[in-house]
Image (cartoon, rainbow over all chains, first blue to last red; front, side, top):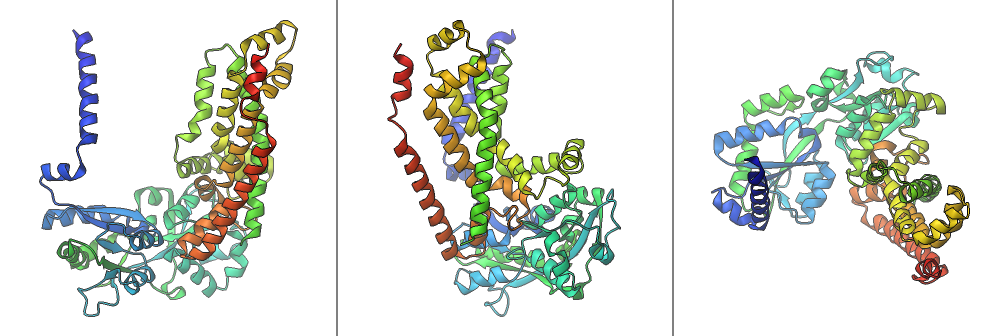
Length: 272
Length: 227
């Protein structure tokens, strides 16, 4: 009984696969009745917390938004070269400013459209595995001679990497620790270096440290805020968006008290 | 121009290619000459690094070579230092990453050698080593050359594994492709142009020099067919 049915199924599967790949994307969008989604270019430190916020946004406004997570530098380059994003949520203010200066982005909802909207502030933490033989995370750990490898994000472009170097400089530890620094491409990778125990500890974002995986594996120490310039995260609207209204709605939503409170729970400091 | 990174990339590619040949020649000979049906699985395994995205491969290596596995602990005890974030670690990563690029051309080359020649050599009492050095390698030298060139250049251009496993340490793990990527990401396009042009120019010179010294394409086949 199963004999003749099975190949039939296989044929059907193959045929439908072929059909789906042939139907143009625009037709598919039309069939499902959906408008093109709002495309959000989001900094990598938002990866743990943005998806639930976007589904809440869709729930309240009916606007479907899709996020792409990359380092802020990569996203800025992509937007400069015409990537079809509508909103850019950066992890700092320099990349939005670069786009505004180039006339490619604006922040028209604030009074001054030449600066981006600060939607949150980042927090730098020192993270260490619980099973580490070294002292628990603290400023003393940074001063400890047994700290052989400390992971940071690339200070040339990753905002948390810049903050990490600034903090070490304020502590007058940068020159001592410089040979022990291992540089990761972004903050998530710095966390991986420490979580796989290849680095003894890492200076990472609080948003990473609060993820289920990292909070199960380790503990963190909040680096005192006076040791590094604030990590202000700025948002801009990409100028040639076709969904300006939806983009404004998303920014307003992120700045709303409820969402700001949610950001606080996930490791960002609210601005409102 | 970061000459330190340039020298490091050359050294990494040279060491990796040497190790790869030592692994890939016996492995390819075994795959072609052997009779076990497990050899298909061996060949499949040796091709597998091409499937994984390099950064994912690098992440797996980071976990495998790290202090949380007994394998990683054993290796760091043997070497006296952890493998991650060191030149040796990059060599291990590069050998795995470029393995298919050494094995595949050699398997294809060895397989194209006339089996009559191999059988004749066997009848005359040639052991496996003699078979490889006197019959297979001379008749498949173009494939050997391809294996060397592909392994070398693939390692020079290697990025994802180095990014995950390296930690960007000047002189130890900051290779030219990492420098190039950093220049692009830091919007230093003119420096990136110079680095990329130099890399491309040198590669073309290197390839042209090698190709000009090798006889025409058909020679290997003609040699094997001339019995």
